[in-house]
Image 1 (tube, one colour):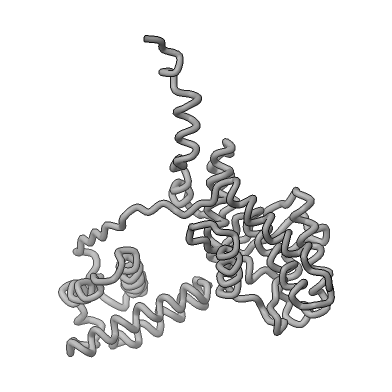
Image 2 (cartoon, rainbow, N blue to C red):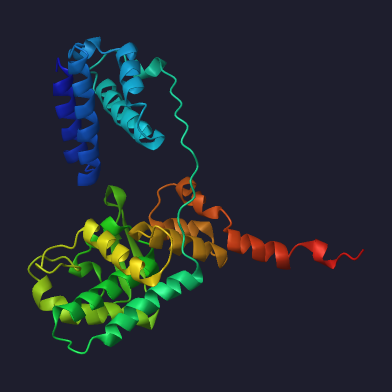
Length: 311
């Protein structure tokens, strides 16, 4: 291959058919690499693969540096992955990234987490909405039943919203006591469900939607009987959040963060939480080892030895 365009085409093909990466990852790669192509064209740089050097890459990094640090890191990682692939396949003699030292500092930001009382308030609110519905044949009733099942499952398992939306009917056990989750890199993990309220919410949803759901095979569906989208779940959570007066930016991922943090506060080993969340590295899970302010106050107030000293 002579041009960067050919290289990108081959790299994307490798990611799709050999590495079997997710559609979301492939899409992100395509966006990042298209931006690199535009950069070359706008600056009248060569598209010849062999002539792309570290000075060109430095120019691209300088151009994208106005983005958020996390975004810059991702775009650089995409380019690195491609050039590593090209080097491995002997398509280039020298990888221009080999002699580049790049350090992008990403500020540490702790995830938004709900307290026990806040998550309880959220769950109670949607169940109260259910009680207010008199006509169980209306779609609005079915919708709240679906919302309850979605929220219960997010909090019960800590799964990602993308994992929830791609759940197939056969991923949920017949007794609604376990879920087979397909995570990043197509890695599967089994998560058990023990609380009767959660199992009951899944069963009620299943009973109401089973006749429509068979058309798609997906467990959670929308009004048009199509697969429920990530955006639909985000919108649903935002809609309920506005009604319950919790002043936090609550997203589907907030339920994942809350699941992990509250389990840690209960003394659950981080290795188990790593499995539940589907993290390939425990380093990713360690963000949850921060001690929440509420827990910190409790510990220092009740456990610190100074409380026993007299003056």
